[in-house]
Length: 561
Image 1 (cartoon, rainbow, N blue to C red):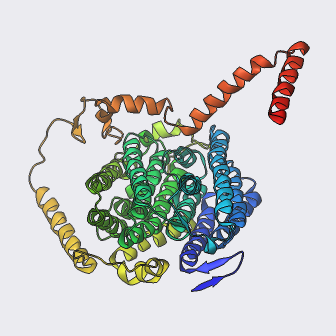
Image 2: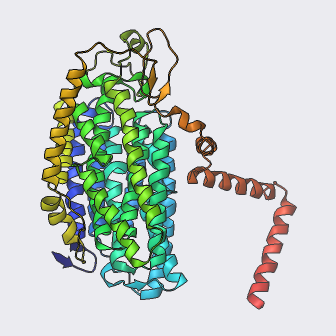
Image 3: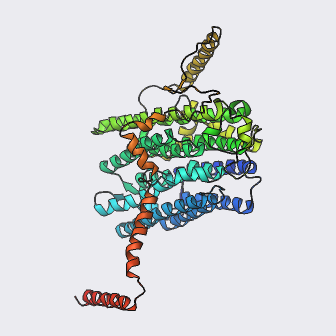
């Protein structure tokens, strides 16, 4: 399908993204009926969600860059307003932070538009075809790419994502940083990289470098988090790296893998946030130290969370494995083009996937499988939303678990039937080149083998219970714990010593001080510059007249030179 006008474009890529924006919007609306039922100002909340949906479709189907920027910028404002519905003490700060980071990169995008107009004399997307063989053309591409990175949450423009995950209401988090912003950001990156600009090997390498760094750095931060939603927020950042890495390969299978991972991430990441939000609503907190034992209390949320956790970790035969496997093939294929860095990108991608699994082992134990906090402790605690923590939690309402189940089922279907459904129906039609696989992967056979493996594992487990339980020193995650009376292992002890390893200890300390936070850096620079200017504003009339005179002299010099 390709219906193009001066202002709008309906092709396979935009239609594919638009369809799933609609699906996620519907799921979030249903979930909100349960999660937001007792909140105030709901008429504004649902109005903002509807406007977000309309603006998203407007951005995806725009064929004019000015019109695109109108919808794109309006989405930043709506994000600001929706984060404000969070009831944590930092919600207003986080809303401002997200708005400034995204708004600041939007300003760079406008600069890119001005350069494109100068180079081509057109802002109609289907008429732009720029070869990246000049510095000014590269600058135009980078200005647009920066906007895509900020929207999707790639490093170094990522810091608004974990904060939003922690402070915004769960439906907002599941809609914006988990699904919508990934779809929009990576869609626009694909649009400019595949259709508007002719990529050079150097820029492809830059994309792969950014993607690899984002994967590893974000997942390392996720490992040491003690808040459920913030941990998921860092994983939302890490997964963007795979998408950027796939598009950066520049070959059909890698690009297809990047787009497929964009879709898969939106599915399982939304499922994770929605399942975690169900726990938050019942427990009243997202602090991992205060959670545990929810697998028996909330079995549906546990199963959906488990499936989504395995999917994001790249465990076959789920959808996360299918898209990561395609990205791995795309990386390996770059070796045939003379790239000597492919092994680094491959190690980063696979290492990130392994750490993701390790991180979710910690998270699942802390929330669902660990010992629950006793009722006496719970009854004296207040929730992050200001209410008393529920010491008699139960399974979420149908309005909240139905979207979870739907997304979890998609994780399975889009993995087992990856070639027949998502790739054949959505991904391949969105690309111009032919995607060729190498190697053998039979999802149906893999599924059967995995089921057999699980059955064998269960049998071995029950056989092991026949013998007397062996007592040994208390340890978790390879780390020995001090013996305590009524000791409770919350799961936050997992990987604690990673922060003591040189040079990771220094990096973690710098990260905690927000040394790598582009918003914090910009804020300090702005206030520092304002402080310098404040010395010039001393309230003395003679000083102001002197500056006026100096300005006039400089102006006359420029005009009369």
